[in-house]
Length: 126
Image 1 (cartoon, rainbow, N blue to C red):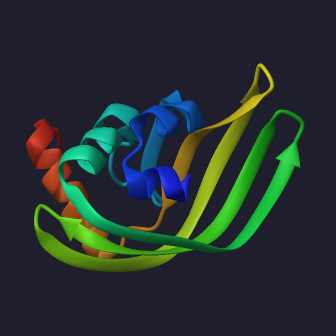
Image 2: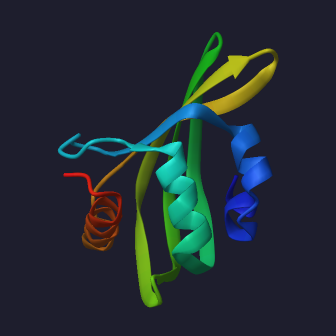
């Protein structure tokens, strides 16, 4: 997924990410971001992306899996440079023999606080 992210490969990302995918901060203090907003931000606002996963740990429960990982990334958001790191929990579901991520949870760092605020303001959300 990280290679498709760096290439901004929407076709591949849509294969890996379910239509109902949401990104939500860990404490759920803000509404989840849907796939469309996530992809729009990636395509139109993020640039010079470098992304690395580490410490991957997957637990499979039949057709559902939870993947925990640490991440590090940097790039520019609306032309402003950022660097961020933290941990993720992804929920994957196997459908018709293919795995797709349906949900991602991540802590809210100061950089991501800015990202969510900007995304919310652009979409008119609260």
